[in-house]
Figure (cartoon, one colour):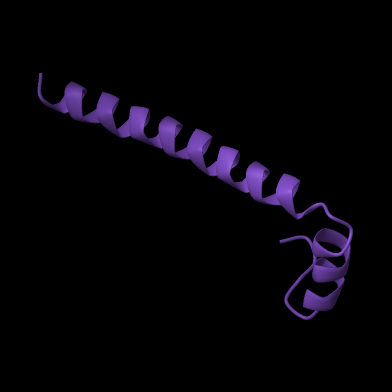
Length: 52
């Protein structure tokens, strides 16, 4: 996280109070989904190669 551990107040002020929390949550969900799909494809490909 770019704010660090000690600056939780800054994070809340910038993301929650400025009504940017929806964009923040959606970006985390989309990023997690994309990462999960890429890793799932990688492990599936590796599993298929080892079964040959």
